[in-house]
Image 1 (cartoon, rainbow, N blue to C red):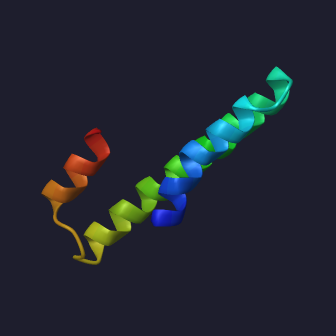
Image 2 (image 1 turned 60 degrees about the vertical axis):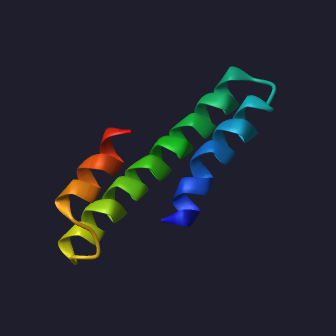
Length: 62
């Protein structure tokens, strides 16, 4: 979860440093993939009772 959380803004920053829009968009899609990974991991943590529904709702609402 930490890796995915760090990966999201890191990929956006890396993409912003690229010269072309096409490359930037590629990094934005990579960041979106990391967002989906993190969301999935949060849901799994709730299903495995590592987190409550309240924790999940709070995490997904921000």
